[in-house]
Amino acid sequence: MEFEMPNKAGFVVDDRAEAEYVIWSGAPCMEYCKDSVEITMRALVLDVTPDLDVAPEAVTPVSVVAEVPEPEAAAIDLELAAAGEKVFKKCKSCHQVGERAKNKSGPILNGVVNHAAGSVDGFKYSKAMKAVAEGGLIWTEYELAAFLTKPKAYLKGTKMSFTGLRNEADQLAVIEYLKTFAN
Image (cartoon, rainbow, N blue to C red; front, side, top):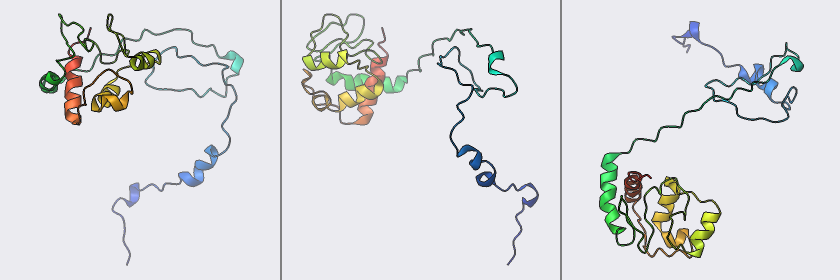
């Protein structure tokens, strides 16, 4: 039985294995490389292969540093934040948020998302929290979710006695709610 593809005229045979792969299978070219690399600007297209027609001495390095605007903060999901406000009721006995927030048995949580752990002024942190803070822990959404799942398992020696939020949806909701209280 013979069959003819309807796109026979436009069909392209993939011959990369024979034509291209052999070019890239050897050792990488390390000629005309700079001694050091620094980021001087951002680009949508990266073209770092030097022109072989130009001698390396003729290439003038670019020394202009472009102004890079700060990335815009991701929009807050107000519906998820509203759900997080309800879940946060479990946290209110120890933590406060908002303009008049004060440290209780736990620190205030204004601006906690994407900020350094153990950085609330006037709060006495556990030795364990001080250690991870000195190690550079940042409360990213991922780290907060892991901590909120089971605080005592995440950080042995934490003063936080809360058993945790097992439901991932509750964790995400609380984190979204906390993002509404940025400093």
